[in-house]
Amino acid sequence: MPTKLQPTSSRREDTTRSWWTPVAGLLAAGLVTALVACGGGGGGSAGVGTGGTGSFAVGTISGFGSIIVNGVRYDDSGADIFDDDDNDSNSSALAIGQVVEIRGSVNSDGLTGTASSIAYYSALKGPVTAVNVGAGTVTVFGQVVNVTATTLFDDVSGLAALAVGNVIEVYGLPDAGGAIKATRIELEATTISGFGGDYRLRGVVSGLVATSPGQRFSVGTVTVQTDGDTSIDGAIADGVFVSVRLDKTAIAANTYTAERVKVRNRVYASGVNEAEIEGLISEFTSSSAPFKVNGYPVQLDTTVTYEDGAVGNLANGVRIEAKGVVTSGVLVARKVEFEDDDNDGGDDGSDAPYEFDGVAACSTTPCGSPTGSIVVRGVTVQYDANTRFEDGLTTATLNGARVEVKAIAQSGSGGTTLLATRIELDD
Image (tube, rainbow, N blue to C red):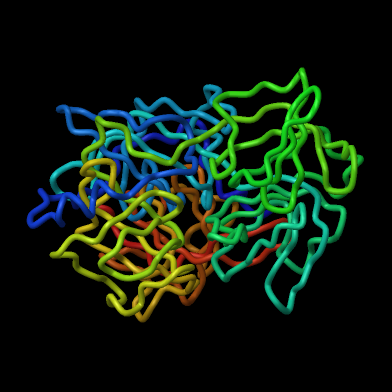
């Protein structure tokens, strides 16, 4: 059965990448402080890491060893882990493709760091109302979800296997129009009647009106009704970003009663000095003006450098990682990396999108065979004749070796499996 792309609860180890350097040549204070941040993030305000330097990262999990986000390996052995309801969770709940917010510190090497807290959350959970394989989209709650080559599937083989009436949970990156670029899709139930949980969604409040006994507003295409039993955290207003937990029984067409509404302001706390934000660009007008990435305020530094793109590639809807120092509540980006959705390993297998570091253990197929699989950090990874082995490694010497594995996603009958493009010794 295909792996669920999750680590076991015993998965723990040092990880991270540090890249932050002091900011030089900040833009004029008027440009920086004029930006007004709004919208919502994951858990609350960002925390402070070791040594008095707080770091904050938003991105998708691309590997374990301990946890790899935006290419940085974070040691999560002492991290507090929270779910979308801000309840305590643990590392076994983390999975490849989930969107997370990490607070802690990043080391001076730019490659490692320590997470003090990790919050994971999905973009929405609800019934499928349309599937368009040709366009690469699935619609949930009337909200369009874009599927790419690197979208991971759990308990369903892929987009073509989804059907109207399925209940799915979608992790991904929202754009300004409410559409979501999916990084992970989990099948929760094949029918609405067979689903025993609550629906969820995140987005910007619009059309707020006061009703009795509660409030009514829209998030995307969904109408939300609150009542006396709704738990409300924060002041609901047009333009704020919220996470909503909904009763699954509709009270009218695409209208649901909220069990919980939480306002989540996407701002940097005063203790955060450094940040790295992955997401889609919005509110972009020019490279000299402030804009947002995944709802967080960003301003380009005068010395910004670009990777896999150039300043002319910046536009609304483009997926990037912005890295830099937080000043006056704005991320002043010293580096911008353009992200793509390629699901390949490049010429030597090293550019595959997923990475796992740890001790390899042979699974049911003997590692001496030309094809087989290994378990690294609780994740099963297959290999075949096209897998590139480095540092003298062979299939016969895999078992017990400490390795770094690069992998791509491939469809299986029960979800996404991982195929190694490159396996080398982890030094």
